[in-house]
Length: 115
Image (cartoon, rainbow, N blue to C red; front, side, top):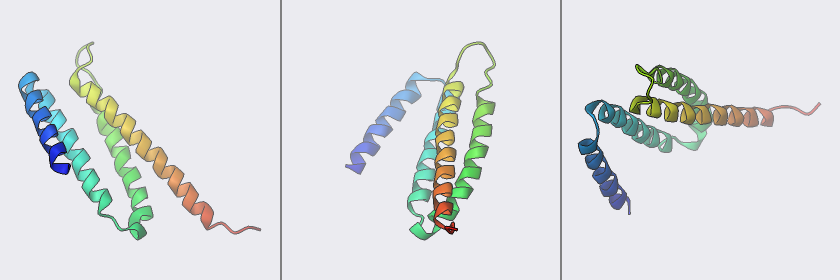
């Protein structure tokens, strides 16, 4: 099943490469590689290290939001591909940051003493 998904995604990427500009493909390639690397890194973390890693990923997500906001700066009045990818990056990084804060608050509440 995994190989089928890889084949489908490869076909989509080849189709996009013929239908779009070089600038878009560079941005899209960086986006896809970031998603893949993030997936591999997070799923290979042991459960004991997951909570300390969450604060680090919140910091990384903050850097992603800064880069995505820089990408949102359009040179023209039209919305280009970089702006769309920037909007997606801001949305996903924001979800990651708020989820990290929620998890951190939940974990810290377990260590509070009832007085």
